[in-house]
Length: 514
Image 1 (tube, helix red, strand yellow):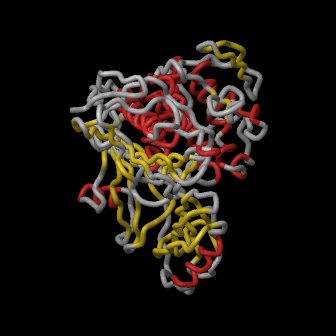
Image 2 (cartoon, rainbow, N blue to C red):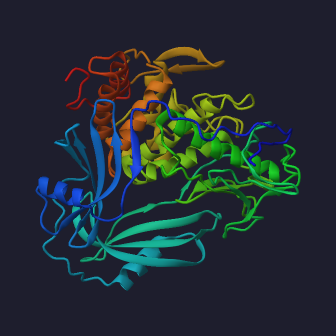
Image 3 (spheres, rainbow, N blue to C red):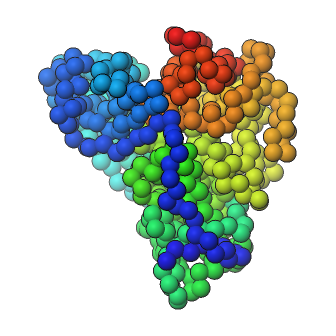
């Protein structure tokens, strides 16, 4: 029987099986092998006989359009950075195709001159600052990066950094020249100092004297007891009354983590009909008490992990950290935005956007929703969505230089877009918090509400963007999806477009009237 308890023990279980509301898009897990339909689509798109499409997800929008996402292979080689989305009408006819990094990816010469061992050595040298000996693996791929398609070894270096953060660094090494083409990490860490969520309801299971912090969907929270590897031990309790709200009881941090995971799942389910990170109805595991005084939290592709912060006294289990990090999992399983350049900024901002929305959704009396990221973690927020430049490093406006910044700062313009599309520009108070959002054109923007902005962005993420999308793609896709959800000429679409004007993303082909 699932129960709900925290430091002050509440009795009602979480409503984890809530019915999904009408959503702007739904997506579903797809087979990991070419299907007959994928083959037919490949032929319809005029791809060569050696090219295959691997269906990944399918989304549908209220205008009757189906958005099918595919990965690509050429003569058996996986193509990195060439995922595509095929948009079909209600009768199955292809309307358009979103090509990630261009259409042509085939290579005439697929014989490597650089060995896998040499590429692994290069990648290992690139992965600096590791403690101990990493594990290294590689795969021969076609890497479709800034310079176009290249035969490459994609090397993955897995290890633990000296600050205790794990890494899964992907390094693309040119298989002809040995040069490093690109690198990105699939472990996405956050920042902060920790918080408790107070008296809340969490789902558990079992019976006296051994209740477990595992709910019916598989959200489970384990105690690593200071380790940096392993699954940890599932938290248990004799009477289903968990923690005491302080670090003296190890379960207090577990309550925060379990609550954050369940609220994130509930938000995506009730708002978009998405059944968790993988859209399979499976809950995400969380590990707490990671490392020694580890002042961070991270998503590693399979689970959430939280450190206990400075002096092991400030756990990083706040709602916005939980929602932020688990949204990295949603992004990984939809658009797959690469964690580098402009796509990395969009990835990071997406996590800020939905971390913010989870915070509003949870309506916690001790951590109310706002447009400040990490405001409860220290003396000042570490990101401001109304005016990102207030952190001293994030730009308010888009420019061609944005992609050169660290992804935590190149996220600034999209965070600013979300605030403008939600609340509009100028001075105002929302939930008792004062904001004053400028625009990059000095032209006022009227917001459409955060629920509208979030629905448009989720639909853009799942149905329009590819792994190497940038700000121009974000603008085009968001305006398309605003029209799909709310109609041409709608006030909602006008707000979405005006907010992109407000952050200085140049206009493309899409308008709210065409």
